Length: 400
Ligand code: 3PG
Ligand code: MG
Image 1 (cartoon, rainbow, N blue to C red):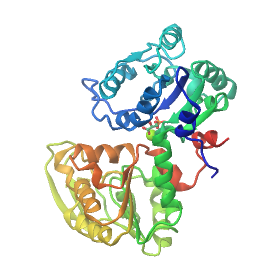
Image 2 (image 1 turned 90 degrees about the vertical axis):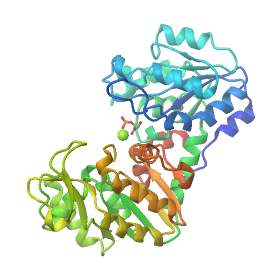
Image 3 (image 1 turned 180 degrees about the horizontal axis):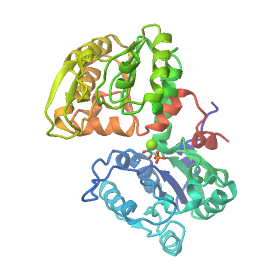
Image 4 (image 1 turned 45 degrees about the horizontal axis):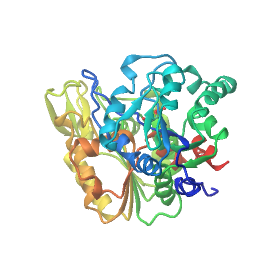
């Protein structure tokens, strides 16, 4: 990879009085009932870049997506609440534009004084942002690029998306990587380079199909691959076990069997699981061995023996990457597996990376000390695709 131009390069040129368009990933989880921000980790993560630009006297124009609106305004995905939280964290008001490239955005940007920050409304309220059509994306990118004299990409969580604000805007403006993007790439490149061994990866989450490419890419590289979360049941099925009504991707069973056969014993699966009568926080539940899952119950967490076995493997590691919860950690009855694995990682004397919006949110939701992990990535899909060795459109655009 060629060296990226960085925020420091831009600051060295001087940004006082210049408009700097910053693509951030402010796609934070919201409470379904109240719409309140439940985890502001991604807002905090972009503060070093924004703070440096404010201090240098730039007119800072921030843009982001939130959720997956369908190319038109949708109030439940408004960035308004994020503007409020960002202002609190910055200690200065954030001027919020109620559209992305319309009248409100134009006047908000025009009225910015040096050292002030604006946030544009959700990029995905515009069909051009995610369009597969180059011309449609390009037309939207032209409108966005008109708000900046330079562009900073600090949206690591979105660098795997070939979207207008990520891929096409940097082709139109002088562009650099922000502090967050730079740190993420530095850390993840240690994992794809020459990680200190043993290198142990823990994967969880619900779907094998989402993780297949990364499992394929990691198998030759890792020393151990520990698999928990909803996706473990498809692997257990591939071993011929009964999984009851647990999450199962039937069309992936053969693929999982093949992976197990080729893994050279590197893949470790749960030996016990917590099974429940229903997917509910108050469902009756018990711990059973994986060869004793009743046909009418579903697994919602890994069991204590699994946590012990996985923890033993993690305690030997010198490098750890963890993506995906081990169970339904949002429900206290099914959080012990995720907590146990997270604690084992913090205890190990290792370089550890937590990848993924969900795993990062789990770390914070469980009240674990973030500083006891080497790095908590703000990217889920992005960190996995980086580890797969894929070209990430947002990074490629910065390299050109
Ligand atoms: C994420 O949360 O994964 C990133 O913000 C990217 O969002 P997306 O998966 O909707 O593109
Ligand atoms: Mg995603």
